[in-house]
Amino acid sequence: MLTSPLTLLTALCSLLLPGCGQSPPPPDHMVGRCTWSYFGDPRAVAVGRTLYTGCVARGGAPVVEALDLDTGRRRISRPFGRLEADDHNNPSLVAFRGRIFAFSSPHSGYHWPRDRESAMRYRSTGRPWARGGGWDEERTVPMDEGCGLGYTYPNPVVADGRLYLFMRGPCWEPYVTWTDDGVHWSRAQTLVRAPIGPTDRRVRPYAKYAPAPDGSILMLFSDGHPASWRSGLYFARFADGRFLSAAGDVLGDLEDGPPAVRDLERIHAPRDGRAWPMDIAADSGGDPVAVYTSLRGVEDTFRYARFASGEWENEPIAAAGRTLFGYHNAGATLDHADPSRLVLSRTIAGQNEIELRRTADGGRTWMTQPLTHDSDDFNVRPVIPRTIGAAPAGLVLFVTGSATSYRRYDTSVVVRRDPGLR
Image (cartoon, rainbow, N blue to C red):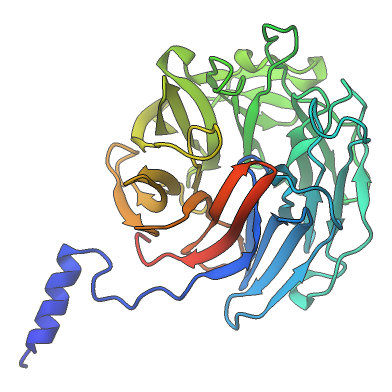
């Protein structure tokens, strides 16, 4: 059989240049003129052939979009009315008992707003997702008043048939409550204790959470904000109210009171750079994998940590570069279906661009697929949706546009189907 020159050229191109000769990915789908923060998760959930995305519009309304990935049809809803324009207020989404649950709270703290009662609101879809439908009544998660500060960063996690809600609590510390039916909640309580800062206030830990196959929950913490604190990075597995190391040693029990963040398993010391957690997920064996950043001076670096063969392995990924209004990096998340894959935003030629990366050797080397290039606007805070059932792979969402603060933004959230590295 004769082989045409075009066929030979195409084969050679595919060997030398990943993605060469393939059809271009479909055009971006724009969820809306909206944004999201780093630490309210999951921001997007794919259930079968439907992608659910939560973000907060420029006018302050939390938005949830349901996108049919086959037909392109979408349903837009605003389940919490209008709050204020603030990127902390994006809805966090989770699938529980056959429905989608959305959580959102006005960002309340020392500065904004101090004259309003804070509340963690949530709603669930009125019917199982397979039949579509709207939202049921708005409910409020019962909370203590604490230090008079507000709640933010909801992180719902389903583990062992129970819905846990992690968040920043009323004293700026990680907080937790849970429900078995989506209506009745346990008493909310502080999860871990933060250090005391120089002004005698507790500093702000930042956290990421993810379910593990054995029904436990993986947790990743910094003990403060790297812009104002020499922060380390700490891990714990939460199971039956106990805090465990990656190897299974008991670190604390919530019945005895919340442990200090610094009493958990340290995987990055402050002397090696100020740490900030980006994401955590379980590998195929249930062991934790983390992506985070390490700030030394003005140089921020994405790093990859995994627990393998009884110990933590820690490798650099890439320089993060700059990002928006005082933050030192533009975000990264793992593919929770395969945490050897991740997506990040870093500075290339003076602009923030999105890259998909994959490692075959535990983070020592990386294959890279650019998803944006030569951009006019910044592209930041990318996520790979959490998937349930026969959900499609290869979806990446990110924020694009411009912003001058967490309350002043002219951005959109877009969906891109990545062309490779699967």
